[in-house]
Image (cartoon, rainbow, N blue to C red):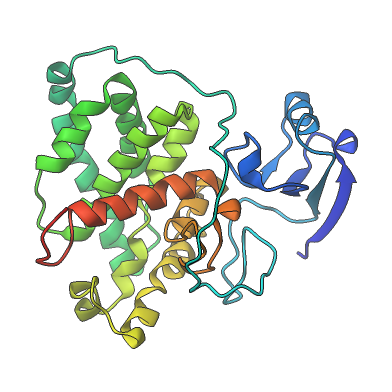
Length: 307
């Protein structure tokens, strides 16, 4: 089914409409997910305080990202900018809608007892998902979704326990460890930003699944991930789109898929696959990207010395 975009005044919004763009950059508003359905009059009132008009999408189901057309720009209008530019982009501080202030309600020592088993369960769930994808099967994501909820609860209770475990626990498969550690960093960062538990669940699950596209890449490319020539890097950067394509029919929310889609985009437009700049990268994907890069610096795949 096709989609028609329509510009309307915010006062004319109705419940059920899908807002795909605003009259200002998303980062200047408190909306954490870029593109959303109007669920209540509170959503309309929030838009009224920030915008005069918006763009809505009509006649399209927006729950899954369509990967049928290569090069499709999902979260922005087409731009003439090159994805390789590295100029500085100045943006105001993030504006989180209704931030949550979390207090640690348990000690690190007590939370460690819970987190140790949880880390084992998380690795096992990721292993099942990755193995299903290797076998060209549709993965059952219920297990990893449950683990994500438990990870969120643990980080909310005390962020230090799981963070400590992620730095000291070793796993033979780098991709599992990288996905898991990225998720932990992202959850701790999201907690500090005040994201509510629902958004933390989207963020954590997106990070855990962000690397699945690498299963299609040649082993030699993954082994040299940090020092690829231009030809191999052009193959390497396809892992994001491969991952989104594998997960598109798995019933994941748009918010989770936006994390997988956008975790390698960069603030100055130098990322991939779309070269989206800072004012167009969804908030959750932005947090995931920072966390993924930080984890790469302190836990590199190669023999390079960690930061």
